[in-house]
Image 1 (cartoon, rainbow, N blue to C red):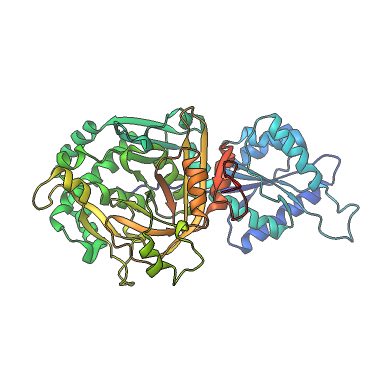
Image 2 (spheres, rainbow, N blue to C red):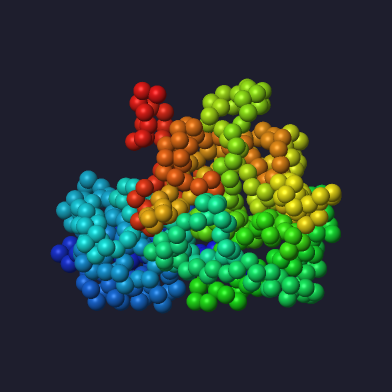
Length: 503
C-alpha cells in the first residue's frame, strides 16, 4: 500500500488595503509578487478579493478555500487594515504568512507610497492581541522579488504545520522501563494539535500473525531484494520482514481515523525479535524512506521530530543515538589530517541498530566506508541467542553517507513544556570501524553544545537527523509551535547561560 504521507503546501495570496490608502497600489503589488513567484517556479493562487473590511476577509478566505489553498500569504501592499487582515488568520484553517511591500522608487513617494513598513508593526500587535500564530520572516518587508524568496522559505514551514495539524502518532508499547528517552508525557502533543493512538506490542503481534500468507508478501520481498542488491545478505529473512511491512501499512490505513498523516513509535526489544522472528529495523528504514517515520524504542517525540523533518525536507530522515565519542587515536589518524577545522570534541558517532534508510548509507563508491547490508543486532544476539544468529537478524547496517546534516529534536520536559534544539553539521567520509547504522558526525563547538544544551537541559540520547542544512526552517516551525527554548550550537566566544566563563 502506498501512502501520500507528506503534505504539499497549496499557496494562496491575499492582498489587504487600508481604506484611506490607494487600493490599486496593493493590488498591483500583489500581481507583481505572483509574477515573481512564477519566475522561481512557485505555484501560488492569486485571490482577487482585496481585503479592506471584515466582510472582505470572510470572502477572501472563502475564495482561498474554494481554490483548494491550504496555506496563505497575507500581503500588506499598503498599510493594511489591522483587524480584517488578522482575522484572515483566524478564519483560515491553515498556516498564514504575513509580509509587507517595500517602497519601489524615490520618484513616486506620494500616491506610490504604501507605508506597509509601518503597517506590519500594527499587524503584529493585533495578531498578538488575538493570540494568533503566524509566520513572519526575519525581515518581512521587500520588493516582489524579495517576497518571492521569503515565500520559498515559507513553503517547507507550511508543509510541516499542515502535516502536524493532520498527524496521528501510532505507538506499540509499552514504552521501555528505565529508558527515559521514551517516557516524556504526551499532553504536549495535544497542545500542538497532534493525535496519538497507543497500542500494545501484543496487538501488533496478533495483526502480524493474521498477515501470514498474505499474497502481497512476495511482491514486497522482491522489492526489498531489488533495493538491497549486494546488501541482501539474508534473503530468507525477506518474507518475514515483508509481512511486517504490510502489517504496519495496513494498520496505518485502518487507524488514520479523522487524520491525514501518520508516523509510528514501536517497541523493538527485548521481546520483539524472539516473538516476531526478526529485528524490525530494516522495515522501519523503508517506511522512513517513504515519509512514514518509525521511531525506535517507542520514542514518541522522536517520531514527532522525524515527521517534522520529513515535511520540511520532503526527504528521508532518521533517528540516531548521540552515541559515542570518537577515540583520540582515530581522530588523530583519520580526521585531523583531512578536517583540521574540527576539534576532537566537535566529533561524535551517531548510531542506531539499523533504521537509517538504505538511500542514506554508503553505496560502496567510497571503499573506506562500510556498505549498506542486512545484518544481525550484535547486542541483542549476545543477550538472546547462542550459536548462529536467527531472529536477531534484520538490522540495516552500514556507514552513513557523507554530507551535510541537521541534528535536531522537539521534546517535552517532565512538566510538559516543549523545548527543542537544532545543530547543523556534517557526516564525515571517514570509516567508523563499528557496527549498526552509524556515522562520524562533526558539529562546530559540539562539546559545549553537548554540555550546555543536551546535558544541561536534560535531553534524551535520541536525536532526529535531516540530510541537509535545514536549521532555518526548523527554527521557524518550532517558533510558530510556541517553543520558547530552542537551543543551538553557539559559536566560540558566545557563552551559554550555564557556561563557566573561567573554565
